[in-house]
Image (cartoon, rainbow, N blue to C red):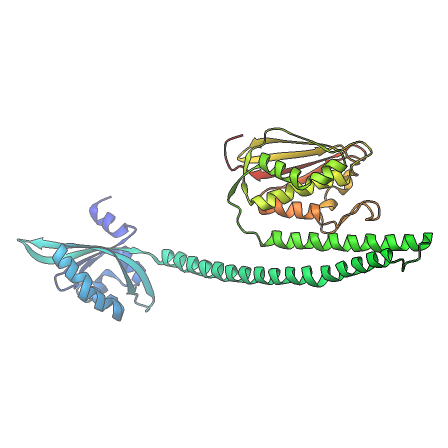
Length: 366
């Protein structure tokens, strides 16, 4: 391939100009971009003729003086006007040509950046969309906070009032203490307690969805100890034993990880068998993910329900037998997924249950 072929088949445009800016030579690449033949361009057009009004002004006041004084100009944005009046965004690099220390012309290398411009537009569009979504998320969080306050006040207040009135009536002997009356009073108390638990769980889920920081380094050993302190009364009353191996650090939201472990341990205590609850927690690390297993010796469940137990407000037992709202395991699933992990359960009736979930590793220290 000779010089002439290289010149015309180059992936960029080449122009030679005389000292007045008149085009003296143009390669086929540039001609094809603009829809001109070399004969149409050479000797009849100046480079300025191919530019928009703003481009002409910039060329004459900045680009050309820079070439004349410095001898070169690099990476300058222009829009070239094609024969069909389409605009082609380009980057222009120029050098001056001298003879006997006198400028006799200029050489320009022209790069088509139309795709780059399109990418920039798409990036700006994506940035604008992200900012709009961030604003919507902020507004949603404000609404969630208002909702939480309404739920806390408007629902829990009458629950507390009814519970207080029932207690006063019992103390002052206003209630019939016959067997049927006592049974009805118990039903009322149990339902008030159930509603209170449901409101608390809904509040917890709402607050959990507001959290957006997932970049904390979280020590799972510390998390388990924190949960053991939080559930101290339940653990002591049920004679629960919790055994853990040395657990890794994970990356995520510490408050959510605490809620995750708390819900799983509370679930094991709640669904215990006649034997004292035994909970084992251990972990394997592979591919930058921690696979945590929490195993109990509780009543277990039929494996056909292994997906159903993670659904919103789905329960396998009547609340009369085992209290709960059906939100705990759903919340666990949401927390794990928000960290980019997965959770599943394995069980057989009477054989306990094993919950397996993954979280991203936050440190190589184990």
